[in-house]
Amino acid sequence: MTRVTRRALLALPLALPAMAAAPLTVVVTGLRAAAGQVVVALHATSASFPSRFADAAAVARSTATAPETVLRLAAPAPGRYALIAVHDEDGDGVMTKNFLGLPREGYGAPGGVTRLGPPRFGAALLDIAGGETIVIPLWYPS
Image (tube, rainbow, N blue to C red):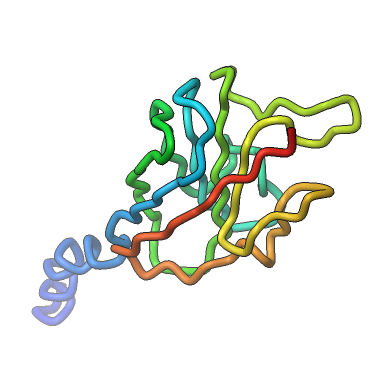
């Protein structure tokens, strides 16, 4: 192994922490009750957006506090992600929907929400560098 190669390998662990983004602070506002939990998720692709939290790039959960809940989300790396916030009022881990498939619990996204369906992936996209504070107001369909 050459001296240059050895130096490059020794420097690699020092460079790796810089690749991860600093935690993202998400302030979820407009909670109508201090019941259940608040979930925020970063999605790298539209395939998991908005409600497949198990496939999200990063997820944070916290006990709901009204009128706002603050969460810290470990961003996986700087990049472009869609962000969603959900007030899981009954605490069952999924968004409760009505017989038409429309959400019954509060939700929000950076680009706002449409009142006739879930937030759009493109409208919820953010450039995350790390260390940002993002405020997401919730909307309750019922």
